[in-house]
Length: 358
Image (cartoon, rainbow, N blue to C red; front, side):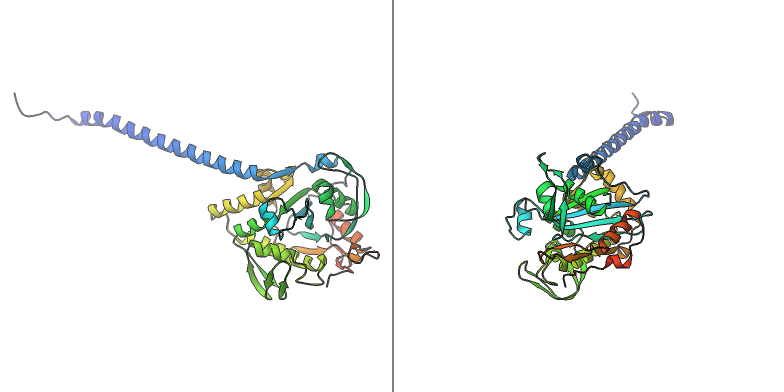
């Protein structure tokens, strides 16, 4: 028998190689499919987690039809509240360990975005403003009768966010399209997630009540310092709520500028971290209570330059009966709300407040 082994011809070699190639292609396709499924599953998990972070409140259902008319333009009005809730260990610690029951609206802003979405106006409502609270339903379903001369920030504690919206609508005649709320812990975590916010401190602040000590000039504040900055009362002005409103407005502009300046799309890890903190921090009306709705609204606001945002304090005067409280000053307050209702420029005289808080 010959020891020579007949070598396969070229055709035989190609036939032998085909099954190996097919197996390699099949394995590659399986790997790609697994990776795609894994990526899709991860994306869905991330979306679901962020979407599930948001707490929604059905303002429209709670208020019914007895509301101001919507703007005839595409302008939008948002009510933004900072809640001083002590719920949870972190909120209690950040609130200075206070044991105050319930929660109040520590900060309140009506943000008006005119048609075109290229600018915005933020109107601060002092928490110590005496207002007429309309009849409201409490969170437990009980009816709360209307009452005059109640502190604005007490409305939240007495009847919840829907009643705050109703109170603002009754006092202003402005239809509130959306509601956003953030508590102590959420505010702190959001500022920390974006790496802090730089503000130009207008004067030295030494607030013994909060422990906040800052020298005048540009300062980069972390979440805890930022919260103390917007809440300080004894470190600036006359120690009233009016004195700190300027700091709150200044910080709002600085925060929005910081968010806008960051290239979030270029850093997916940072984007998720910030989105996670932001969505966990927020309570919104049901119209914004999904990641898709919130993202679409944020994109519609992309043309607004924070540097051009106008900040105004609701014109108020010291109350004649209790000088520790303020009331809406007329005719300035009426002129301000009228301009917002009609989506027209705000008159200069409507921006001046008899009570300034020093």
